[in-house]
Amino acid sequence: MIDNLKERNNKISNQVGLPILESVIIAILFLLQGTSELRYVILLAFIVLIVSKRMFAITFPLYFGTALLVYLPYLILGIYNKHPNFQIDIKFQLYFVLFYFYLIQRDKNDLLETLIGINYVVLAIFLLLKLQLFPNFWSEQTFGYEGRIYGPSINVGNFILFYYILHGKSIDKKLLISFLVSICYILLSSNFMNLLILFGLLGLLSLDKRTLLKGGALMVVLLIILLNFPSLFPALVAKKLSFVGNPMEYGSVAIRITDLLQAINNTKYDIVKIFVGEGFGATTTIFRVNEIAPSLSRYITFLEIDNGFYYLFHRGGVSLLLLFLLGHFFLLRLIPSIKGRLAFLLVIVMTNLFSIHYYTLWFNVLYTFMIIQKYGNQQKLFSMSIKMIQSK
Image 1 (cartoon, rainbow, N blue to C red):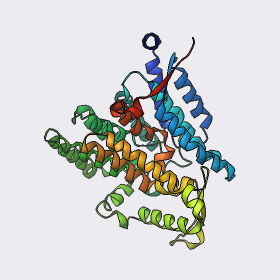
Image 2 (cartoon, helix red, strand yellow):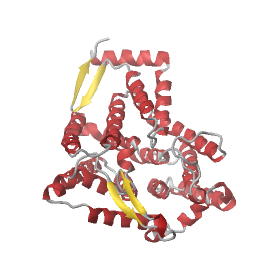
Image 3 (spheres, rainbow, N blue to C red):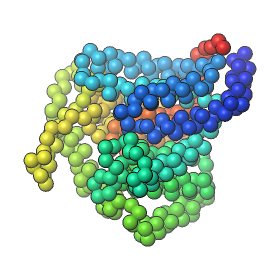
């Protein structure tokens, strides 16, 4: 009966063009990552996305419910500690839950095409921002230090490459174009972390006799673009590329290390806090020293310093950090290929060392979803689910 209802639901969706509507809303949601002022628009988009499924049969996986139960005590602890503006932190988890709940209900496996479409949209917006022909919803200023451009969250190309690696696909024309599109707007934003992940994933994808030549050709094309059209990209790009061989000397990396050490020293952890943390909603305050202009040195309070592992430790202590590591170890075990495991490790380690975006950009849940969707049915934990019939 459930299968018949799903089949009928799919026919209705195709007739009224809902797949197109969903793709548009998913693109909008991706673009709205990193914006705070449009939170009501984000929630509305999530609601429309979920309702658009016209779900007659709702799937509620056991592992999804388990994850929510694990999260609940740390949420309650954060509320109990009365952190100021705790909703700023908690809203990201709400977005994660809503997005993942929608992904579970998807029947068509058209994720790759959707990501490729979003990739083009992001490039178009960055080019329009560069030409100052588009309003900037992501930052108060469009151009930053040495010409970097502030715009949408920019890890679409990483998702596409991860999809190719996970599904054992070879480098093809579609991937080549997607990589070049991604590299253009990553260079415009001069985002070092996404640049390293993008090159790392491409390198892993190229570790094959069938694809090694294509991967090398792609690097040559990129070098030609960088050498012949340097004015297209911020001056900061060349400076950051010079630190690829020795990232520890890069100023931004040094600041992250200094902030982490100061945050650990500033927070007084007793045995209880070491084990369970301070709950969601906690923030970190550090004193940022400006060596060039000492008078501009000041205290800065962050949702969290740019270290995802400390983000988890501050909120859930050793217990939550250990649960995170064990959960991701189990996901790694699901992936049969060494290349796929290395790709997932690269994403986890690089993202958490350089930022907290693994927990604040809800599209990052796609990494977990892709793995479970591809290999989860082989494990009872991920295949067990409750299916609820919803009346018309």
